[in-house]
Image (cartoon, rainbow, N blue to C red; front, side, top):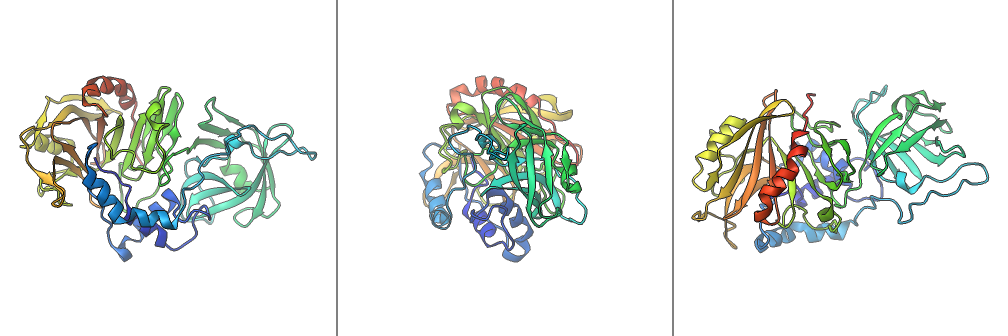
Length: 429
């Protein structure tokens, strides 16, 4: 299995001009990762190290380390993406204002909202750092506020500097959190700054990603959620689109990644043991639901290329997989996901397959899905995936891959994952 986590992506982000959203992050995980797309014309495409799903693929680990991860750790420190350990809200001060509760000190992600005189707006996110709450729109911060809690428990925002609000403008808003703290609702309030009064009210999703290179949602509660960075319907220059994937999970799940081309879910009991440093989906020792945007047929020789002449739609990919000499496919089951035609099947790497990847440390595997400048997925000999290919209405395709740490558990985990997958929606732009 491969992942979009790689050194080249981080370095492009590091050298990208312009202010980072959070100043003390040398590499701000997704904000700068987004900007890497803008600079490809200048610096060229990046290559993702080829990593396969294997508990014993030591060559893959070495490739990542030699590829520069050690250098990356030398130039940046893991960001503080969560609140202080003590989550108790401070008591109000003598002036009736209290500090922002710890449960609100996460990043909270929301949809884009129009703001006059700001051209680049692809999100509406709240970031708290060093006592300041920023409203990030993708092209920068629209405004920055000092957040406090009133004696009545409302959220008070006082403009600290710059942006679309005048310094000293104050606004007061009722707010609430879902029982698990993953959904923030800010209600309409009273504000000296009219623009802030229009865009702040709404629903936001907490980003509590354990990875130091991502702003995924992390731990989830039983609730409806939306992706924030994943885009299964690419169109020209990439931009964040909140809700490009909508889904529902029961309790006991987490979102482990949210990149423009890959979105992933995993059982919470496995996710809480993740230290945030290694590649979550590379080791092959975790249960995963992974959504791949725009998958293409991967060449048998592990080259960074797609098979010529094979289309990327569901039917073309399915026909190619059925005829692949290194794969065994169960009869596809046709259904609909989000109202779109889908085909689901188990795929296994043939025991007699001898194709290898990595000339210096060869290991047997069958490449399956490749997307240029993004991911390269393969299946080790004797192992299986459950795959659902979905055709969207604009010609785009997604592959939903279910993978388990223990291959013997795949069927049962597929049944556990099925209601979540059946809840997937892929709203049009």
